[in-house]
Every structure is written in C-alpha cells, then in structure tokens.
Amino acid sequence: MSTCPFCSAVMIQAQKATRAGGLYACLNCMNGCLAFRNGYEVECREIENFMDVRFLAPKGTPDGTVLAQVTKALDDLPTLPSVPQRIMRMVYDPMTSVSDIARVVNEDPVLTLKILKLANCAFYGGRQPITSLEVACSRLGIKMIVKVVQAVGSKEVFKTRSKELQDTMRSLWKHSVVTAYCAGEIASLMPILSSDEIFLAGLVHDIGKVVLFNVLNQLYTEGKLWAKPDTDSFEQLVKSYHTLSGLHASQNWELSTELRAATFFHHFPEYTPLEEWKPLVYIVGLANLMATKLSYGGLDKTDEPYETHAAVSFLKLDPCRIQQTQDYIESQVEDLLNAMED
Image (tube, rainbow, N blue to C red; front, side, top):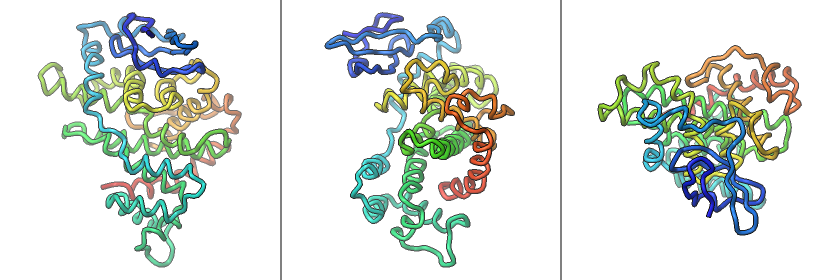
C-alpha cells in the first residue's frame, strides 16, 4: 500500500499511479507528492524544492487553520458540468459534425444563448443576425464552441453566496477564461499538445484560489477569522497556498496528471519534475502572464517582459510572436467575455 512520504498516511488515491508517474495530494498532511508504480507496488516520493507545508502553516496558526479546511471545502465544490464533458468527448471523434455538437448544446438553454450571442458579436457577426444554433455553431467553428462550452461550464465553480466575494470570484473567473484563451493561442504557435486540454488547463489553473476564498468565507461566517475574506489580510495567504489547494481540487475532480501539474507548478515551471509534464506547465505559466498583462490578472499585476519569462526559452518562442498573439487576443477577448456574462 502506498504511503505519504511526509506523514506515512495511506494514500489510496496514489494507487492509480502508473510507471510514468503521477502527481497526488495527501489528504492527511496536505502535501503534494509524486507516485510511481513498480509492478504491484506504488512508491510515493517528495517533490524536490518543495517544503513540508506543515512547517509553513503549522497547526493552530491562521494559515494552518485555513489549510485544514481545504479537503472539507472540496465536498462543496461543484463538479464540472456534464454537457461540456460530453462535448469534449465528441470532439475527439472524427465523425462528429457541427450538427452533432449543436444538438448537444441545445440541451442547455444557457449555453445556447451564449453561443448565439457570441456568433452575433462584432468580431464574428455578419450582416444578418443569426437565430439558428446550428448556423451559429458553423460560424464559430468546433474549436471555439468547445472553448465557450468549457468557459461557461466553469462559471458555476466560481459562484459564491458571499456578497463580499462576488466581485473577487467574477474577477478570478475572467482571469481563468482569458488565461485559457491565451494558452490555446500560445499552443497554436507550437502544435505539440491538444489545444482542448490546454484550454481546460488554463480554466482550472487558479481553482485553488476559489477553494481558499470559500474556506475563508466559511471561517469568517463561523467567527473564526478576524477580518472579512475580501480584505488584503488574506491576499498573501491565497497566493501562497492556491497551487497546493488547486492540486487537491484537481485530484478531487480526477483530472489528468498533466492538468494537475499545470495547476501545481505554473508559477514555478522550472521545478516541474517530469519532462513530459513541462510543455503544458510552461504554456499555462506564460498564458497566466499574458492574461495579467491584458489587465485580467485576477488578484495579480505585473510588468514582467516576455523576454525574461522561463517559458520563452523552454518553448523556443519568439517574444515578438508572443506580443503579436497578445494583440490578437486583445482585439476579441472582450467580445468573448461579454457573450458569456449573465
């Protein structure tokens, strides 16, 4: 039986690890770890360059109190909606047509309205308004439909009952959508991965922030915090632990190891332990920077030039091409977001 390298707790979830390796989170001590299968045995190992989180957030401290509630908060985190997942499976079928996609989208009235709205926006719209879902899907194309479906579907995850957090969650959702869109466009410069998986990686890369804000709001409601969760008091806590919380969330959703890695390592892609995980991690890291430079940074701001970002050299990208990609996205991202707004 596989055990956590930090606390020796049994890690049942790591039993799914393969010989190639997997990324998991311990539900007991909260630490992330690697897992490798060797025959019937699974060995869990520490991740190099990452400290035991129990030293950073000891039990009884504010940080420790928050992290202790993360696994419980995951029970209240909505699952990814079924219609987007069905459409994702259809996309990989070469026999799928736009009409097939339209029939599935038509099962969701909200998605239908969003796609019609986007197809009629200034960037995509023609001379005549579109009222047919199938025509709208044809105009947008399957790739854009997948992006809209995933982005709209993810919005449920960013909802909150807290009035104080509504603006924060809305900002985080916009950041995630723009990051996902940037990731897809960056990937088009170097077609080495599925653009659909890359878009999803961008959407979920900051899901840990959502989890932490939900925890903070619950603790505040219970009178266990000294300040409201929308204040600057907790901004550093969220930034410090959101990648770890994101690993727990992506594990809870049973996302692929590559998607978990992009969630956990996107701020420090050079620490990604396995080579096969690195392309997606670097793309999401660069897309996160691009979204922030486009003023959709969620909680973040930056003046970092593309030339100094580690992804540029690793992915062998021309900074001028990256800037051109940013300019192209800037010309249409507002239409995309407006179409998906309530």
